[in-house]
Length: 264
Image (cartoon, rainbow, N blue to C red; front, side):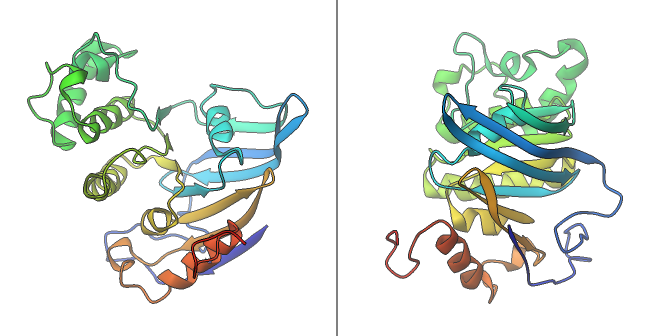
């Protein structure tokens, strides 16, 4: 695997946590530590000896072609699927947000957020989270009355009410329009700063990965083929001189010609 550190700019004083060259904070709790993880479906290998370590407070983005095993790896980390081999140590406090908000249509918003929790203890936190995600007063709304962006905000609140040490996001913005997607980027970063989970974020959008993540990994042929760490503060990345360079590197790793937009 090729590891590149891009723009080693100290984030101190910018609202960003200080990190090392791989985006890790000193002395942070390790929430993911997996070695040699394999997974096959029948005779088809999907994961072929995956090694990955993530610390509390990191924001890690995973890129890869369709069928490369990104969601399979996320499901293994979430204990929704099992690995065929390897060593796995994953924080027990973890939550998942999928591309589809997956709200129960027969429950109102607040019961959806409290699903699976001790409702009496979590109710105050759930109400506070609704306000944080911009949905104050939505407690009694039905899921069918929500827009796509609102439904995903509820899904985020549901994930965070469990106070996860690891937040697993499986293309949570893919179905949203461009403006709503930008707003969700801002919201996720705000919540990440406030609640301090590690984030494992799957996306097909290279620009999104560069704008949000500390580390970006490309999954190819069952293994991570490239890892890039970015320490430039997020509020400086849109105008950052290294943005296009990293973008070209990632697109090339994904087999896309950045000049034509086609595969090569």
